[in-house]
Each structure stands twice: as C-alpha cells, then as structure tokens.
Image (tube, rainbow, N blue to C red; front, side, top):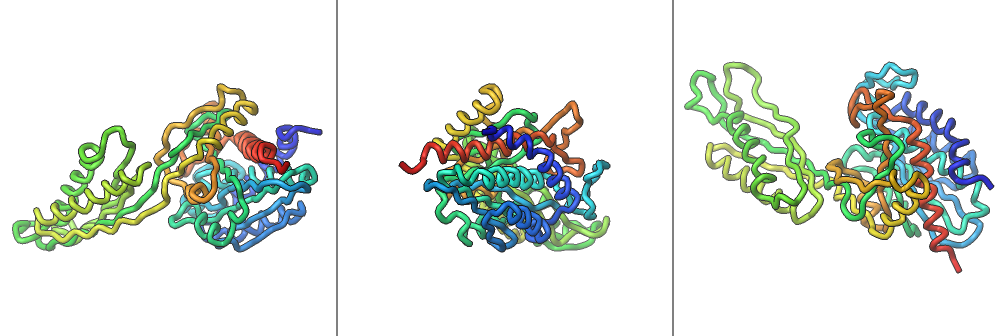
Length: 394
C-alpha cells in the first residue's frame, strides 16, 4: 500500500489547482457562499457525508471508518481579506479589493487533499475523521464559535489545525506546548473636547492634543505597568480628528489592539487603560470614553498533543525541521476549538526568499510556496492517523 505521503504527493497537482481557483475567486468573511459550494461538491464526489450551513457557510465533512475508534477533527479556514491583489501571476484575484492574503485558500485546498486521502482509506480506518471547513476566521467574533455551537465538535476526541506561515521557510514545521498565539482584542476611544478657532486655542479643549498625550500614556502600560517577562502589546492603529487647518478639533477617535497570552495580564491592561483614559481626561477637561472589545482568546496547545506533533513531524520531515515555535502575537479563533477539545495548532513554513515569496501576511503581494500545502496535508493526515492508531478500540 502506498504511504500517506506518496498518496498526497499524487494529489498535490489537484491541491495546486484548487488553491489557484480559490485564489482567483476570493470571498470575504461571512460571504463564503461559492467557496462553500466548491468544497461541498468535491466532498460529495468522494462520497463523504456532508453537513452544510454549519455556523454560517461552514461545512462539516465526516469520513466514517469501517472499524470503531475515536474521532479526530481537522480544520481549515476559507475566508479572504478586503485587500487589493497586486500580484501579476495568472492566479491573481479577479475580485476587486478582495484577495487571499493570509493563505486560507491553501488551508482549504490542503484539507481537501486530506479529505480525498481518507475517503479512499475509510475501509482501513479505525475511527472517524471530521473535516471542518470554517468561514470567517479573519473577523471577530469569527466562525469557530458558531460552528461549535452548531455541533461541529460533537463526538470529537482531538482537533488539529495548520497555518501556512511565510515568515518561516518552506520545509520546516513549528509548534509549541501551551500558549502559542495571542488573545486579540480591539479598543475604541472617543475623546470629546471643545472645538474652536485655531488662533484662540485657550478657549478650547483640544481633542487632538488630548489624544496625543493619551497615546503616549497608553505606551507606558507595557513598559511600566506589566511585568517585563510577560509578552503583551498595546498598539494604536488609527487616529481620526479634525477637518480644517485652522480649527481646533472637538472630537478625536482612536482605535487599536491589545495582544496578550495571559488573562490576568489582559485584565491588568484593561484596568490601566481605564485609569489612564479617566485621568488624562481630567487633566485636560475632556470627556474620554473607552470601549474595550474582547476578541479571540489565546491559542493554547495541549502538551500531550504537542508531543505528538514533534514526534510525527520529526518522522515526516526530520528532527531538524520540527521546530519549537516562538510566541506569535497574531490571533486565531482556533483557540475556541482548543478550549473544548485537546489538540494542537501548528505552523508550516511557506516562505521562499529564493523564489521571491517574502511578503508578509495581509500584504497586497502576499503569496506562498505551494509545496507547503503538501507538507501541511501530510502533517494533518499523519497527526490524525497517529491519534487513531494510539487510541484504537481494543
């Protein structure tokens, strides 16, 4: 019998074809209708049991093994981003202002390859494989929680997911036990001052000046209010105020993000933000309102399942290519699956400097080394096979 890697190698041209089709036809979060139909039709062709409309445009495919055993879930996200594709390749996005700038097209295509593999092997399986094709990972509150609420994890014993990652070189894979990706929160600050003439600033409460002080003060939270060994970030991404060069702006809008790995650290940051907003407002006589929006929790890998990753990855790619991942400040709603079921989230290197594939995620020139899809599929399939074998019914 051909090995898992050999079978996936034979399916690799199809993965490339599927990925390039999806790359040409991206769909934003909560709008993945055509992508969902594309996945549904392929799963149906392979005789896989399919549930559609799971938590939105989500799809759950189930491959039921001929022998009793546990159930392993494998997840891929499907949504694109509101970014104009600036690549000139033949598979560039055909949808103005929308592109797959994070690799979700490749995640979907890799999992389709795994689906075909297990569909052909169902007679040998001692257990079941659930294939979770998830919408809306890019936009909080995301698609994972609605899929879980709609039963996507019912009967699941373990869950695995992969993210192709261009900052890491193609050929190596990465993970770590415990927290690996950050909680991703958003905040909005509204400053209300008193507008007036630019030549008479003493008669105003300058919201822009208040905002400038507030931004500087917010940057003291990480540097002076949090233990320096705790990784966290407070960033300002947007500031809007004023309409004219000679008018003191009455209102100022600040929008940003907070990233953390520990909920006690998050709580301390929120506490300090409230204090800084209130006291900065008092100092200048402005009204400052903070709206703090809790986002995805941190991605926390199960220690035993992470040990499985290092063992399986070393056997697939060699020990030197199974690397302990650094902490990554990006957020991921795979965290919700891991809160319910033991599992592991893994990174597969997808960058290739020699081929010019160096653009970061969420960039207009983003692309991947497509060979990473083969490594991703092999890793997901082998993790599932290893779990089923280790937990097969006696």
